Image (tube, rainbow over all chains, first blue to last red; front, side, top):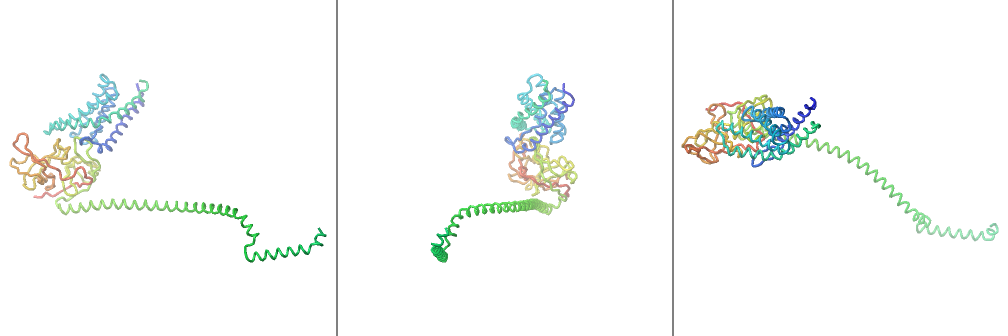
Length: 170
Length: 278
């Protein structure tokens, strides 16, 4: 059980790393592209920290990331990421609790789920709007994950470092 | 000694006189041997101390030169910095001048676009699902949701979808949420220009709801119809790239290449108000 100030520091550091990632997305996102698809780091901020945490705090952090994204990014719905990212956080936390121990592989799987869910929601909204080119949308979803996948490892390393530094007794 | 001088003094005196006369004679025709010998003996020393003195003087002059050069270098650096600042300012002024000239030309061409606001693109699309720009002008500059955004040639770039205090978001013409009343300039046929996700990645859009007998050709100019009064009429949306039949085969649609170069844009104009031309 962490002291209150340690808990605050841990979540503050998680948020700082996520902000750093958001900054990297803004700076590098435009210059790297795979077949016209740019990397999208935000689902990683919802998925990876949650793999190191219990389901409730992991989901809450993912919700905060979702709210942040909705304030920052254009989306088909005003609360698009607020709806999707808590599910990503919940899945990631449950995944690490029951199937895969938190680590690089778990982060990659959780991130893949994050991209899958985000893409699926986008496709659903396009379909609702009568504009559902499924093949183009699935292609974008897969390419987006593939070009973002290399970033999973440094992000996982940073979140893991924070977790280990604040859970020395574990 | 006394006896020697008594006996030989006259000879000694004579010999001294002869030597003196000889020396006087030699000095008249050539350098004094004693002076010469002294000069030869002291020459290395002279060279030595002259070299030391020269070295010392050189060092002193070098030090003075260095100090002077340092001062001159500092002054030159300051001058260069001032000149660079002037050049930067001139470059900024030139860019602004060019932009204002374009704006003036655009205003002269399009008198119906009564209020234009020049804006700079500060960010491009950050997701793969939306085609948008962020501008550096917002509600404080009179920008509102629904305002059209055009480039310097008057081609339509997109429509303001969100406006903040000093920023705004533009959904480009190729975004899936963009839908505009359009008209083919040559045939006057009406349709709806709208984004399509499968075309968005290639920076293309569709011209839908064309009449069944539409007779479009590649290269036909597509402009805003202005119907409904939401957007100004006559803004160039793009050019027909190809015409395709829809899945049912009952109607056709056109693939349109936007006239605005969405990848290269840096400066745009927001149409804050316009007169409806009938």
